[in-house]
Amino acid sequence: SKVQTSQKGLQRSMRGIATLLSLVLLSSISSTYANPLKVVQRISDSLQSKPRSREELKLGIAGFYDRSSKLWEEVWGEHMHHGYYVPANRTDHKQAQVDLIDEVLKWAGVEESGSRRPTKVVDVGCGIGGSSRHIARKYGATANGVTLSPYQAMRGNQLAQQQGLANRASFQVADALDMPFPSSSFDLVWSLESGEHMPDKKRFVDELFRVSMPNGRIIIVTWCHRDLSPNETSLTKKELNLLNKINRAYYLPEWCSVDDYVKILEEKGATDVKTEDWSWVIAPFWKAVIVSSLRPGSIWGLLKSGFSTQRGAYAMLLMLRGFDMGLIKFGLITCTKPK
Ligand code: SAH
Image (cartoon, rainbow, N blue to C red; front, side, top):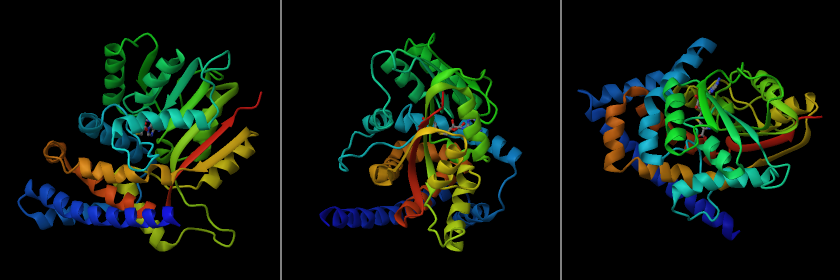
């Protein structure tokens, strides 16, 4: 109950910070425009619109990351994902992000040494390649990353060069739903916070399986909606409404639950299927992102970065609300491809 009380306190303070941030953010965003009300209206209108088509989504994702990755890297470094907050009060956020990778690998039972350690890794939805380079270094493996964003692929390769990993980590623009790799190519298939962008989860899992070697390990860490209870057939209207707004801001298609992933994996005959909800592990992250966005440098960066990044910043508040109401889950899913 002590944990619950402190969780509640944390949620309250997150809400407080969220409100504060929305005011600061909106006023800072609006100062770049003549009429503040117009900007608020513009963000709010744009979050109401209809879902995007597949093609619009793909172009949107590429453009969104082309435009926002530089700012993210300046503020947060090379990892574009949540941090590992155990204990909850840790303050080295970049280290927390690296730890998340290590803790997920440990959770999934990936061996650190010996003949079963990973040697060939694919990083599906790789951002600027933070996971790939970390994993390549950690296991002495080679890594191939795919992203829809040409900027990210270029930057990923540049960083690999700078870090002396050019011969072992490489990045290219490609669609995760149709990867340019032969079947059975990798012994570790890694997808960290990219599954939520995939408009066809079944096809996504099919591709992860296809490029995995038999007996290879597949790890998906992704935003999901809560599992439905047996007497429910869908989320509530209010929940769907919130997700739709987040989808507009972050270029996401319809969401699914961890249960939905498990169903797909079981149909494929996956072995060692294991899942876990780590929402509590990452909870302090959004607070930290929001606090970081209040730094003068970040605000200045945001002002220069254009509408879709600004809207993305605003949508952090919606994410916070989604986690808070138990709608959004930080899902871990792993399995092995059958021999
Ligand atoms: N895994 C990275 C980046 C997460 S951001 C990290 O943790 O640092 C989400 C990434 O998914 C972006 O790089 C985006 O380009 C990629 N992505 C989204 N949809 C994709 C698709 N269909 N094919 C390939 N990459 C995709």
